[in-house]
Image (cartoon, rainbow, N blue to C red; front, top):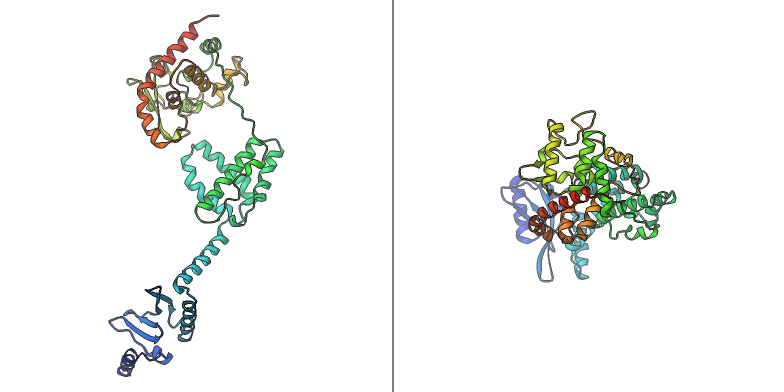
Length: 415
């Protein structure tokens, strides 16, 4: 029986006779690949492991190509022949059946993906990549916006089916309550998700693009700041006269001299400081732009730090809480101290020390690029940033010393 079957396949290969189900069922694998033709390019590819695969060889635009149909017996001889005839019809019409099959498969995959890509699933995928680049505080805030406001309304909707009206419906309630800035933040967040969906091929168009124009504009307000020289001197003297908690006092005394963001100083740890080298290196994880920032320390600041070290140097934080050395003072503590000194919110804020330094240093004639580098503002060009970080360091150290001397001079002036 086996000899008869072998004789049969030899005959089929030699004479290109059409295959039969009887012959296919009797077929046994050998130690070599077998290619058994059914005519017009259709053949059964039999491997030594016993798999039987329908394939069709054809030429298109002068190139030899191969089309795969499926495995026998899942795909019967009759169905394989039907697929061959369909492929031949496509060739007559000038259509590459292989390319057509790939496009059809891609369309099916795209449809399946579209039907499982909800706004929430795409947003979480985007946030998993974008979130770690943010400060912990900003990351937590965006997560709350997503989970508490956007997901309950948009989460289960397919991102490919969303319309501008869907985004406006979830954002406009905040606008109606007068929270214009929140409404704009929510809409920008929606736009980040839909742009990610477009970039990753989930949608063809970013339907949230430009929708902030449908919202009432945000009236930008700047942090209140004392910037006039006489008023700066008075503020410095008021800080010196403050009689509250040591951590709060030194935080307010040092902040005007280093003019970092308030949280960057408030959360500072002794391990970040090289007092001998007069340098403070703020780690990237605590910076808004997520990159390390170097602050040259004027000799006045080093002196204040050495004095502070006598009180808090046995812990990690420069400004520990009154309750425990293991936690820093709260963000409200220095602000509350300013208020007790008589500085209302429309007169001075903790961020105002940055505006104070920026205003006066520009007035004093220091280069704007150097001031911006010391403020750790975002640099638009990454290459330029890398250059500037090295280039400006020689200018930032004398800038910080000159600024400290200037502040001392204002403090010592009396009205």
